[in-house]
Length: 110
Length: 116
Image 1 (cartoon, each protein chain N blue to C red):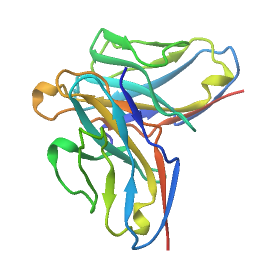
Image 2 (image 1 turned 135 degrees about the vertical axis):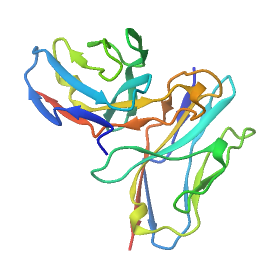
Image 3 (image 1 turned 180 degrees about the vertical axis):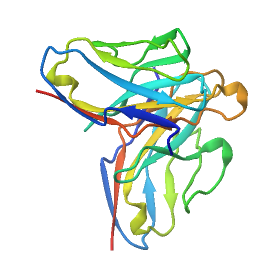
C-alpha cells in the first residue's frame, strides 16, 4: 500500500536559515506528489506539486525517484512560513484519493 | 472564499448521539472528501465520493456514514458518536482529472467535534 513518511513532527529554524522538510514515499505505481500547507487559523491549501516544477513563496521540491523522496526546501526561512506542512501523493493516472503524511510543523524563530 | 463551506464549525455532543456534519461546495466539483485530523496521525481519509450517488470508503470509515444525493453536498454522519471520534473534520473537493487540473483539492475550514 502507498505510504508517505514525514519523519519530523516539528522543525524549528531561525529566520533567514535554510529550511528542508523531508518527505519519503512508498508507492508501487508512478506517483504524483504534492505539498499542502495549513497556516494558523486557515484552511489547508496546495503549496506546490511536482509536475508543475514551480517555486511558490520561495519553496521548491524535487521528486527524486531513486530515493523516493520529495523534500520541500527554501533557502531563507521567513516568520510567515511558520505553519503545518503535509506531503501527499496519488497515482499519476486515474482519480485515486490523496494519501497524506502525518505532517511537519515548521516554526521559524525571529 | 465561500467556495466550500462546513457547518457547524464547532460541535459538542455526548457519547451515543447521532451527529451530522455538513459540507457544501459551489464549484460543481465532481469529487468530494472527508478527512479527520488528529495529532500524531495527520490527515486520514474517511470517505470520498466521485459523483452524486457514488461513494467509497477511505482509510478510517468505521462509525461513519455518508451520502451524496446532490453534487454540491456531502454530509458526514456519526451514527453513534464515541470519544475516539473527537477530532477536527475537514471536507474537500476537487475536479476530475480529465479537466486538466490534476487533483488540487480545496479544503473547507473544518469542524471541531468534541464527544463527551
